[in-house]
Amino acid sequence: MIALGTLSVSINPHQPVKQCGFIQQTQPVFTVHDPLMLRLLRLDTPQGRIIHGVYDNIGLSLDQAQEVRTALKALFTDPTEVVLSCTHTHFGGDPHDATYFAQLKTTTLDAVQSMTVHPITDPRVSFVSIPFTGVGQSRISNHTANVVLDVLSFYDGNRRLATQVIHNCHPTILNGDTPFFTAEYPGVMVRALETRFPEESFQFLQGADGDISTRFTRKAQSIEEVERLGTILANEVERLLTQPLRSAPLTLKTVSRQMPLVHELKDLDKLKANPNPSPRELETIAIGRKVLENLKPRFHTLPKEVELTAVHYGPYTQVYAPNELFSDYLKVIPKSRASLVCYSQGYAPYVSGLEELPLTYELFTDTYSAATKTLLYQTLAELAQGD
Image 1: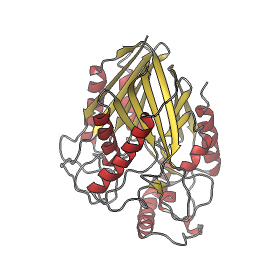
Image 2 (image 1 turned 60 degrees about the horizontal axis):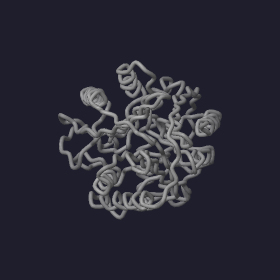
Image 3 (image 1 turned 30 degrees about the horizontal axis):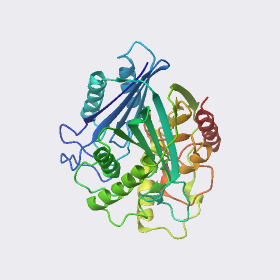
Image 4 (image 1 turned 90 degrees about the vertical axis):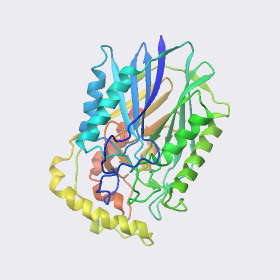
């Protein structure tokens, strides 16, 4: 028997806490503009169980994600895989705050224990992937990025039950001085789709967005612009969902790999300057230099391995990585049957591809060696192949 369940619960901070995404966010806030949510999808099959939680947050640390995953797996006696992802909003509560992380962990455990699953008589799955630059594009001048929109849906026969939307664009329309919590444009999209399809559950998953944001597509840094771009994304998802989609039988298989890492500090001053940077790019490069100086004393503590997970839903695959991967890694992901989801199973910094780039903010915490990046390409390609 196959059964599916979904649940959404609030993760609004219970007390003031600082936000999580920008260097200037140093003071606690308590005002919530729109709800921060944990959205859960649980799928039980004869092959095993998967629980996928998506937080409106910038990202849990590797250790925090492992702690919550271990606690969730302990709730069950049969094989259970847990995937924890984040939408990467920069305006959630800071998970480094011990009190707020304890709230996230308790909320997650309570929610999973309260979930109910319902049998599916004809379990099926569909997948569609298209290029889409309606919300964001490359945020690095003179650089081309691969911006895609993927939609994975779960069915009982012809009745759609749950959908995961995977899009690779940073949710950073607002500026770092925003004095309230918000799920940013992913939250707008999910709420719009839940209104239009009230019998269905939705999750937003962040793709390989290391080099992609709204920097050159947004008209302003305002909540009105958050609503506008979130609605544009919702409209495109609705268009995809209302066209004929071919479905396939749903099964479940999970695979995880521990990939060794070799780090190196690059001499960024040897890189060519961008010939025509935007004012925001110049501002972030200055911030990057500060971030790098903070990283140098901790260089020896960088992780020596990273976990990569693949979930095969019949013919369709999702590959999960913690890093802010550049969209160049999508070239090893079969776009007709697989997605690459970042900010999953923990959070780790930017990883650019092997191509040469001008000096840009994203490179200041990009410590993977060329050999490690090559291995990453190979590992992602292998995981994406499915059965």
